[in-house]
Length: 94
Image 1: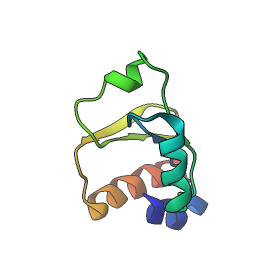
Image 2 (image 1 turned 30 degrees about the vertical axis):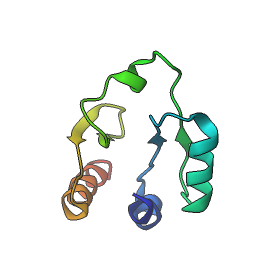
Image 3 (image 1 turned 45 degrees about the vertical axis):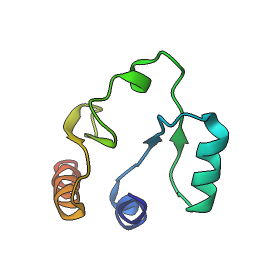
Image 4 (image 1 turned 135 degrees about the horizontal axis):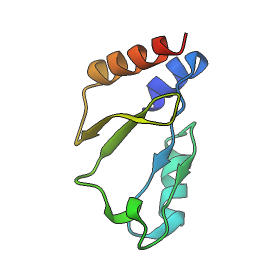
């Protein structure tokens, strides 16, 4: 995600991380700093749908320019597959 964020950000890709780790924001902040994550990462409120509504971790949600969910990946996704899907969505906005 970091690589794709840097590579495709200028084309319109926006990445937002949602951390569901136990341990609170301090743990997430340390990770973000250690790995130089260039995009925002948030921690959902306890009891929120984001905290408990995922079928697996990681879950990646690809949202189009209109804010609609275009595709959801549960588990690891191959970079080439994800990049292809992103490129298709970015082309729709041109």
